[in-house]
Image 1 (cartoon, chains in turn green, purple):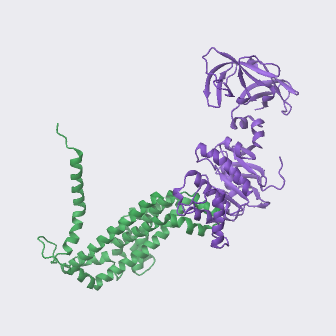
Image 2 (cartoon, helix red, strand yellow):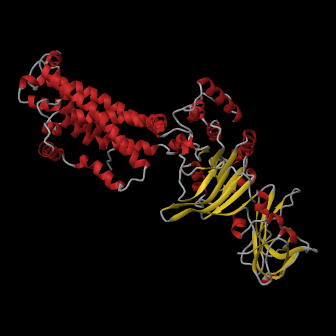
Image 3 (spheres, chains in turn red, green):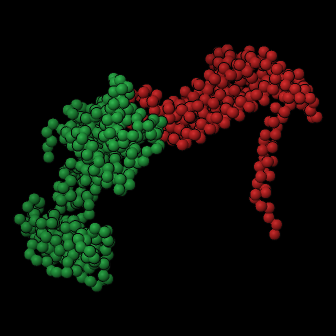
Length: 263
Length: 366
């Protein structure tokens, strides 16, 4: 009887899986060093000139800056709201807790295109707002709060609520307790939430596409450039940089999230 | 027993959770410098009562006075009480020194003063070199002492302890029972602790309040509580007890009980208010009964029973006996004062005397 042993098959499947998953992504850095504006094999000479051009490209850098600003503000705002929501969910007897929870989580389930279209009509027709980076930021906060709340609920449920009671009992008021006990203990989750929300906002395309006015965020700007082959290498270079930075950020966020399990 | 100028005065306090009365119209005075235990099974409302003293729960009715002041409207951080939590709640992000000094941070004290107070506390709990240890480097007993120091450093009028020894193993528990009492004597603060462990309450407390279903059923000294429980429930909860049902035949100095098929039994009944014809339970603690080969003499009750099982516990042995006409087995606990005196359960056949002096019994009405 012939049987394939798991020690042979499993690594094969793993390699195949990893290649399918990451192979296409790795084309990005590969071609960013290729001395040609077309992404075709065989490759030409090695060059790093696209990276130089990328830095020179003011509109590309402008879009990058716009995205960073939105992502930073979004991550801070969503983490604050997420913290408040998580605290309410875990510490107080909230009326209609599960309904409230479902409503906060809803933006994760609604397709972005529908969310984008409805927010567009809400901002423009209902509130009569101009489309600016603020409208993009607001929409990003909306989709980031669920992530932030989930991360922080896990943490706040993870530590003993007697710790906060002990702090009150020892004479601290609500704010002092928050600053001296709750926040330090939740810090790994707060940082993880900041990083994750930053990435979600930075990467977000559809809502930004619907809701940005004259100034485009980086993903929207990149998309608009894809029709012009001469801009492609610059995008590849920037994309490679972002790839590296995201990988580092997500690893750090995950490391923080795991580290907290030990306290 | 009325307490003059009590440290804590609980007046008709009730606490509802939904429609459940966790604490039901409790009235209780606790004296100054008293080591007071609230004893009860889980769900009896004892922890809720303690949390109301700390301020974490607000009574639905009644008022609590600490040192004469009503405290219902006072937040936990403004009360003259401090608490040692069941799981100790040591702040994991702070070291021992920072944990103990925590309650002094918002007092008007210089850093040097705080350090001095913390050092004093480290001495008190006999962990003088532990200041720099991280919270997760402490054993259960050490955590408990740190929690104690952290509460005592605030110089509360009352220290509240929630199941203070529940998380410790048996040997450490016995050590800490003595140490807690010593510390309480040293600092001279009123200690109120909650426990479900009757032995813990008996060994540590000056007085014990027994709680059941949100009500206090008896408040007394450990000795009085054990020797003269007010009700069958208290008698059963504190230690073991043998109950022999019967009817009172005559009263007086020595009452006679008709215990049905097992015959007549007598008991000292000066303090019990019973009259002829009352249905009663004659209660006898296991260690106050003896097993014997000889028939009882004057002033001693005796029953013939069969030894059906025994349990050897080193210093003592427990014997379980069946008596014709009694639905429940009797338990007798005898000290093994000399070597090899413990009896083994010697088969069905062996009949033996169970004897107890008439002053060892107690009349309880159900």
